[in-house]
Image 1 (tube, rainbow, N blue to C red):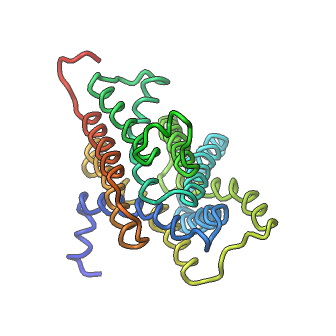
Image 2: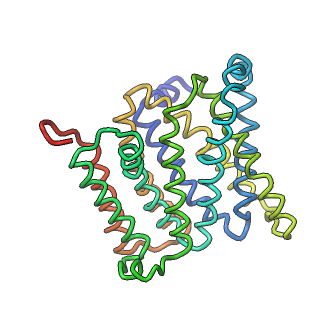
Length: 303
């Protein structure tokens, strides 16, 4: 690879933009896999593939980190089961009954949910401006989940897929908060153990799915989708995000997560033929405004 091209991969904005692109592709790939790869198989094969790749590169770090891994194995297993396995099982089931566009918009509210949970359970600082942002983000989720008909929420007539995605967001928010208890491990060791944990967690569900006669479609398209989610959102996005955070800091890097619904909308419209509706624009706009307000720092204001 030419040096000029290599140097571009040292640019934090490029790395973080690619991270958002790869993560947005996860929901689109999950929707494209409907009818070709069942959700349990998709999740199991994704994390099995990711684990095999990660273990190949992480072997020296795993040997060095093994004493710490052994001491913290229950925590690490639970983190993989929740953050990697449960979240994606819910997401891949959600796209069976809602759009990739809905999923990506609902997923984008997670930073505000994490902020709220951090305040409730860990007494993390929380300003009135962040409270306003959280409220706007939650209204944006409500608009999206109800497809613009807020009366549907009063009658609890919410699409099953949207309800699953909201639950997935709560699950991943809990995982993110639990990262504050992460032991000192090399990031490759950490990802490899969590990916293996996710694969083991999904294995019984995958076996049950096969016993019911629900099998992946043997096709190049199905294989391509599995390879994509195993490599790009599972490994490269994590690598690029870690590198980007190291170069410009977590605060500035986190803003790039806001690109996920934008990229997902473009991919879903171009690749899946999904329709962009007014409630998508309103809901997504409220969530983005809420995140922007939540990220602002205020001086001399009540906390």
